[in-house]
Image (cartoon, rainbow, N blue to C red):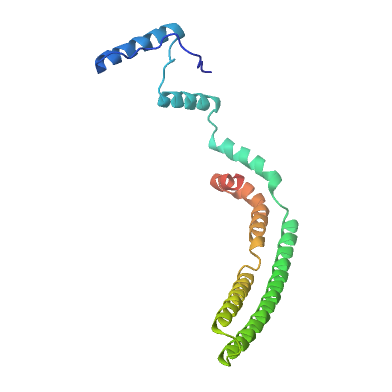
Length: 197
């Protein structure tokens, strides 16, 4: 599309004033235009507008009614039958319940481990108070136990909080696919555009 080979006409900008330099550049631009044709020299903006105009020439105007029909035809194969969607949603609900039960069970196990750590911390404190262990050993052991306790508490909270977050996108997609058939028939053009994305 564009010829970027080296040019014979290179302006020499040895002139001392701005006016002389502009004159030299104008003469060089005139010579290039004579040798290579019109629109050889363009600014970046001119080039971008030219490419944009060419892109618009390739895409004819489509009436809104025709666009609505075209989008509807494209979306029809992607609608999910209601029976299938209901079955998928039932399975998602069952998976959510199972995931919640598993999360509660694992959180309970974490709580049991936290209680064991609390008992060890209590014994550690008693050993320190009875002067069985020195202060440095007590501080190091307490820091280790507290770190484990904090980690287990965070894991337990995370388990109870995000029980089935991974199922939400699938559930949303299933509902959208089930409603796609109705959107194709009764939806507005904007709703169809959103669905097509």
